[in-house]
Image (cartoon, rainbow, N blue to C red; front, side, top):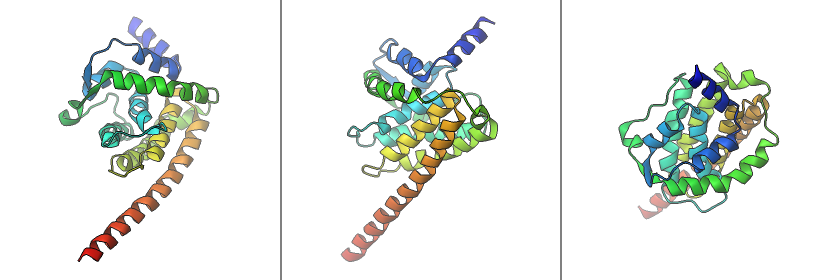
Length: 212
């Protein structure tokens, strides 16, 4: 009963509070993705996705290959939302990838002012949008953006990362209106990214054709 009460208490905490708790957790040095997900416990699929998407949502230079490292776990977790799983599973190869605990703390601290500002406009409303089939639709859109995020596109991480962060925050705060906004933003981002990918692909084909 006590664990249920604690889970209910955690579910009422705002996203910024949950992120602050993670930032204040003991430093484990280098931590694997699997260990990190386990550390989040029952604090939802959406929180895991938000944390992995945040580095790609900030207006800071990206680390080469980092969008792929974070995009693959988001894709796997989002697909599990689509299929209604209640606990997160990651393949061994993904779960064993390691990163510095200090890096995730730095990213969280940089993102907290933005999260706190967004939280002024986010609150529980139209909650059915974030449940059942609505949640699964959001999972589909997250998976689509995570697949794009995983591609090695220079400068192509911001739109997918920001779109995923918006939808993850909507799920965490149970805000259906914000979720609808996030879904429309995501659809627009998918269109833009498709245009960018098509342009790069055509330019690459033209370049190779010119070499022949």
